[in-house]
Image (cartoon, rainbow, N blue to C red):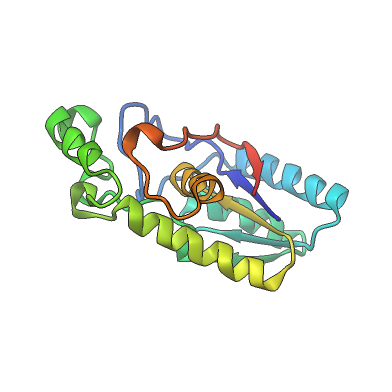
Length: 179
């Protein structure tokens, strides 16, 4: 089993922006609060004191808190948010409806902003899931909305490529799901 939490809300106002690999900080107290919730959850469920995070601060800061409390913290680039290339950090208005429509028309294969395709994100996500499944030990992960949506998709659709209309919605900041 994988227990996955979405990182805390970024400290900056990101409404209306395309955020992928932009490395945004989170409020220190929110990172610590989520780390406490993960620690309590692991205690109740008897999972090892190990957390995997993306290298992006909004996830890794939670892992660093857990490491201060004796947890093993593994940073894995495969857990990073989708790479939106030139779109990353831009407003959706700047990106424009035509560019978004082109992505949606070929959702799985198109690389928005010349970054990463959804198929690439799914492959990254699947490689983490396969590695962890082979180990057979429950692991806590702190990740990003796109990666979590990819994990949801892989759990449900078994090898099918998604269209834009079928893609799972985002989980809330700090929300936990089990895969």
